Length: 84
Image (cartoon, rainbow, N blue to C red; front, side, top):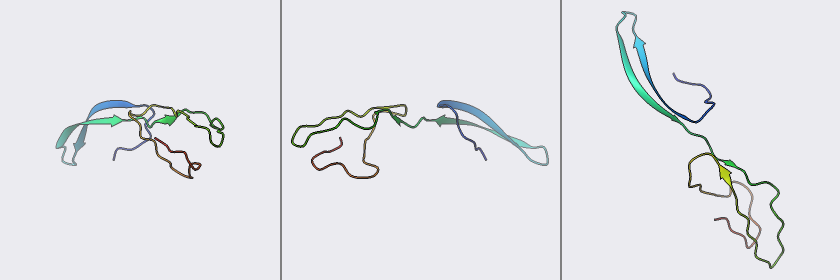
């Protein structure tokens, strides 16, 4: 079993060896990519809006792999607003 908590994004190559009780062994090379999840960097709360006036707020993130896909994870947007 390979387990733990990665501490950095990295691409690693390593070779594993298994040895039986009879001293016979086998090796195999592996590649592993540890990716970083994106982090939303837009401060909260967002700028206030006014009823009947156009509203626009750019959301920003860092890390991970672009392009990002933005979706509503919980709650609902105010009537008349969409997320794209």
